[in-house]
Image (tube, rainbow, N blue to C red; front, side, top):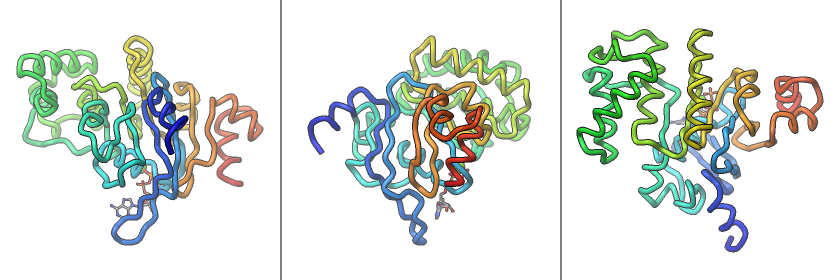
Length: 251
Ligand SMILES: Nc1ncnc2c1ncn2[C@@H]1O[C@H](COP(=O)(O)OP(=O)(O)OP(=O)(O)O)[C@@H](O)[C@H]1O
Ligand SMILES: [Mg+2]
């Protein structure tokens, strides 16, 4: 496994090599899954319920146990190397926010957790509240925010420590149309202006088509196809990415 695969790891934000994940109850969530997310790309992971998307994200972020030598974040082994934790920011699929911390405290606390000095963490919290239009809710606890506001806070939290790889697990699920387009604009800006690598999952295929330079289809714990949306359309036929997706899942 030396040589070219090592070179590949260096220029990739994320490399996954034949990763299998079997949960304690025997469920095989990932089945020798391999994936490469180029550094600086906007990448979409698309697949049906239960395909293994959240498991893969969890393993990358150290939330789900995974073996060594299988996941590399900017060349760092995600199962061994704490540096990889600092490089990744995750907005999880399920909204779990500490109900005792108000929005600003929650963001600043997260920054402190990742080693930022107090003042810097607070400044960063204010900056992100502004960006996500939550300044008026700075002192509000998550249980008093609307669903869409909680979703925005979750994304803001993923960004506090300025990760180079931002992973968003269904960031726009349950988010209204206006806010969805606002989030799209923000994610595009983050990607183009700051060179951040974005990996997102979504069940809105048109969202992936609008945002992602590359897309991978995942089914039953395996990547079944990967490429630019236009390449996938060429490969599977149809007019839109959705057609290609439906066809890929049918085969
Ligand atoms: N903690 C767990 N223990 C046992 N099985 C699990 C656990 N978490 C997930 N699974 C199983 O692993 C498989 C993959 O689940 P996962 O959450 O990764 O799918 P997903 O692609 O994110 O789906 P969705 O689109 O519904 O979010 C499913 O069969 C699921 O039931
Ligand atoms: Mg999921």
